[in-house]
Length: 324
Ligand code: CP
Image (cartoon, rainbow, N blue to C red; front, side, top):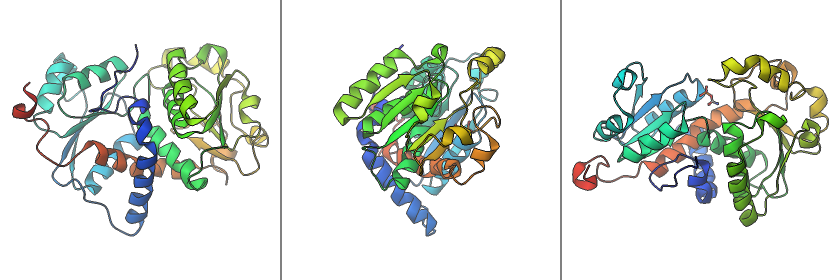
């Protein structure tokens, strides 16, 4: 299925493709202000529900801290604690939570459930990862590259080494939107979805970015200005572990592969890492890893995203405004 395009929600990176320059500029400013001890406080009194069907270290914590910095309140809602876990529908959950909250952040197994929640919620729904995309991650990744390249994406090339997964999908869309070239190397069986590649190519035609796919990790690494990888086995894919570990042999960022990149290239990983599989200790703990800045940038990027979606004004869930 293709992602539903709405202005209310952030379900796909495509929903904010045109806003990325402004979001990155705002995130950089929020980061600088936080370093000086100013937390923002621009959305006082807002309430944000966090529905997480899967575990999370970075996304949950950075959203909770971001909401607190903005003067709001976060409510962590595990499906085990909600009636969702006992069969209440997503539609009914969406309609009720819309009466209390100003936005919902949703980490789902299925993109279809993300779309369903957004369809029935009268408040914004922000995708905190599903089986199709991870858009908030990619805003932080672009922020990390933006900082290191002093705001210039054009003429830079990112090499992806790994799975054609949700992270790569959002990355292709985000890179294409900002004019960053990508060479993505995946095993043949784990290529990105053709409809997302087609959407990225449409964005790339407008920005001038070049997007290319290969099955050769060396082609992605050669001359790249940054390398990026992700785990071989994502949450929910544990049954495929043996097959995936076999298919991904050679798709590892290690010191030898890094020598093929540009001399000043840095390394990204969205984390958590499986050390010794997709990335070695030597690279992850080495001076060319940008991963800790990248993880920190989840906070600043998501503050900018929340400001965009948590607009001040009348309560969004009010039935007098939305009629449901
Ligand atoms: N990168 C990322 O989404 O990390 P978490 O699963 O810890 O949130």
